Every structure is written in C-alpha cells, then in structure tokens.
Image 1 (cartoon, rainbow, N blue to C red):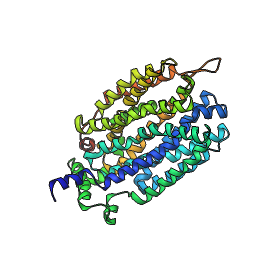
Image 2: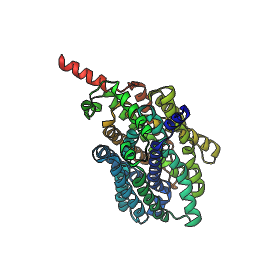
Image 3: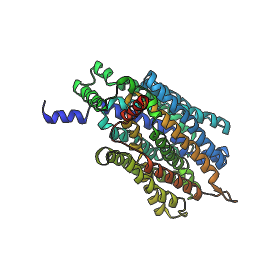
Image 4: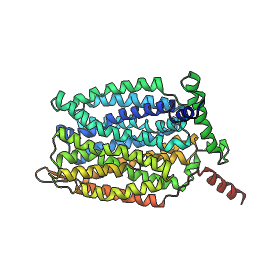
Length: 449
C-alpha cells in the first residue's frame, strides 16, 4: 500500500460515515425543538400566553432535558448508545407530531416535558459513540463537527419552516409539526442500518477495514496506556467525581448553555416584538447567527486540536467576546436593521466558538469507559442553565401599557452569564494528557501515608 493510500485511509473511513449519520440525526433532533421556538411568538398569540408563561414553556423543556442527560449517560454505558438513541428518536418524533394538536397552556407544558425527556436521551449516547469510533487525537475535531449540527439546524430551520408555513399553509404553524414526523421516521431507519456501538461490530460485518479498525483502536489504546492506569481503575466512575476541575467545568457549561439557549429561545420573539419583523423576515434574521456559528464551532475545534491543544484559551476568547455583543444587541433600536444584523452575526460567532472544544474537554480528560457518565452528568447539570435562563428572561421582558415588549435587560443578563463563564475558564486547571493517573497516584500516596 502506498503512503498516499495509507494517509487517505486515515483521513477518511467508515468512522466518518458514523459521524455524518450522528450529525444528521442531531439535526433532526434540533428540527423538532426549534420548530417550537421559531413559532413561539405566534403560538403565544394563538394561546394568549404572557411572557412569563412563554419562559415557563421554554424552561420546562430544559428541566426534563437536564434530567434525561444524566440517565442517558448511564444508559449509554449500560445498554449501549445505539439503543438509547433509538428510543429517544421514537419519543421526540411522536411528541412533535402531537404538538400540532395543542390547545392549552397545560397541554403544552406536558408535551414540552415529553419532548425534553425524548431529546435529552440523544446527546450523551452520541458523544459515547464518537468516543468509541475515533482515536484520541481526532476527538476535538470530530466533536466540533458534530456540534455544528447545533448551528446548521438553527441556520436552516427558521427559514425553511417559516417559508413552508408562509407559502403552503397561509402562515399557520400547526401543520409544520405534523410534517416533522417524516424526518423522524427517516432518522430511525438510518440509525438502525448504518450505526453500531463499536467498530468491532462493523468489522465483523465487513463494512470496516482492518486497517481503519487498527487506526482507531491502536491509537486510542496507546495514548491511554501511556498513562499507566490499570484497566480496572479506568472503569471507576468516581474518577471524575473526585476531580475538582469537573465541577468548575460543569459551572462553565451551565453558563454557556444559559447563554446559548437563552438567546435561541427568545430570539424570534425579540425580532417580532421589539423590531416588528413579519414571519418571513423573522426567519431570515433568526437564521443569521447560526450561519456564522457553523464556522465558529469548526474554528474552535481546530484551535483546540492543532494550535492551542487546550479548551481553556478558546473558551476565554469566546466568553470575553460574547459580553459586549450581547449587551449591545438588546439595545439596538427598531429600524436599525444593519446594526441588528451585524450584532446577530457577532453573537453567532462568539457564543458558538467554544462549543466543539468544550465538549471535547471531557473526552480528552477521562477514560472512554466513563465518558458517557461524565458527559451525561456534566451536561445534565449544565442543562439547568438552559432551564433557568429562559425562565429568568421571561421575567426580565418589559411589557409596555400598549403591549409592546422590550428586551434590553434580557440581553444584559445573558452578558453577565458570559462573564461568569469567562471567570470559570480563567480558573480551570487543564492538562494535555488524561489526569486519571495523577488522581490515582495522589490517592495511592495518601493511602500509604
């Protein structure tokens, strides 16, 4: 085999097919949750909801979602990530279709809880699958690519579904939720056919070459074995629970998700209520930040893997950049569409720059046997930021006597969350290699003493 062929096999293989499938599945996941957020100002009008009730609807989803993150991580380690993802897709597809029938605030609350439980069992298993299929040196970039689904989906969903609603359903929002059952059914099929929990399963089926299998497993084994940690100790789930950096990282993630989902939740309502955009123009402006976010996530992963070799400096740049642009976005006056678009693009860049690298931090720091649990617990606690942020924002919206709504204080709150995340990033201790051996050595020395 020539050197060029060897390099090509390392650059591209069946592991990348797995990655693309996981990416597509998560876009389907985001279609369902973003459909609600996109049509939120019109759902608010149809169901006669107050801003506080809108915040409650957004937040209750993330409450259920955060609980599901923890159980999803444990289930992924216990029964395998593919089974957990399959159950997740079935649940959130069914709930999304039922959303088109909602008639009251109480019904909507129940459906939001169901959607949160369904979608919350998707992320940690997907991360565990990436961890199983990619060697350590490729995980920053692979996770960064996976997280671009969080930017691609918001970039295309608002434009697509508002256009379908506008041109085919006279601006009605309910039919869109019935249509979204179709990509869910497609997702169930491609998960069943293309994805396996481990490379060994696809090697046995003849879809994975021996060379790629060795590239995945040998590289990974070598890097972890260099730490000198016995395999039975690697499987000890308490490793990350004894690591102080895990808790600091979780607070950082809490703040990052508070900013991301706070802005994503209220963006369409902000554009309609404070800037008076119609359903078609709102879809275009709401997509703008996420067009930039796609490149920001990839740049962040590249910086972590190839330049800085750490998450910490990427996070500092992202959070310090987010503070001023979020603060200014809430104060843009109606009619200043140029300034509004510019700030939306800047928010999309800085808020999303650290997304790929922040989740690769767990995968680079802990043994693969406990990545599912560590990711699930960290993301479960972190997602409480997604729960609290939209709820707090609902109380910060100023409603005028004429019914107008002003969001200046809402975006100041998001800027403060970014400031806390920046402080966490500054304090976070980070090593290039797995810290497991350090933790176990300290424990061993302590026991001897």
